[in-house]
Length: 165
Image 1 (tube, rainbow, N blue to C red):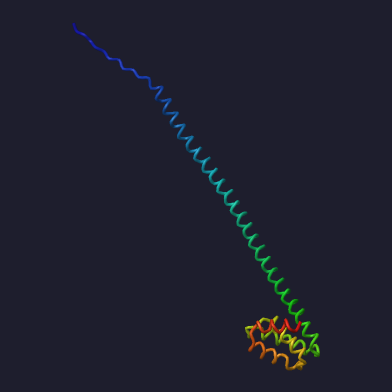
Image 2 (image 1 turned 180 degrees about the vertical axis):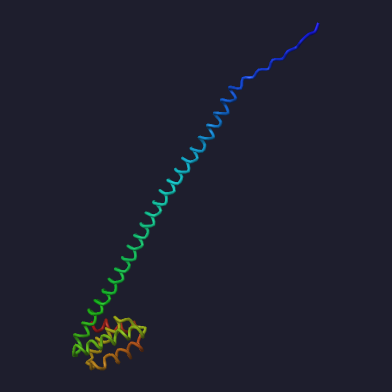
């Protein structure tokens, strides 16, 4: 008796084909998802760039405002110093007989001395005022002021100012 053995192998590849199709579709989705993600990243960086641009503009505006305020403050200090000098120089005008031109020359001479001597313009003006009280001629007041300022200490000027008032 001859026996026969028969093997029947059957396979259902429909599940595998479905899985390969799903995998292929997933890969296709990865491309579109990657594209979408890339677009979102670009959009986010554009928004960040705009925010940085606005921040840069704000900083520039702040710095500009700060510089403007400092310029105004400097101008204010300059004008205040000029007003103080004119106020102090008015005391010289009260004690000295001179023409407008002589007063202008004396004023400029005092300002120049304040740049070269270690004495403030306020103190130089007080010395000139005292010179006028002493009756020193207007043409000699700048020389007198320079000699006194060059040889005297500020505490002496304060002492004389205290005695004069």
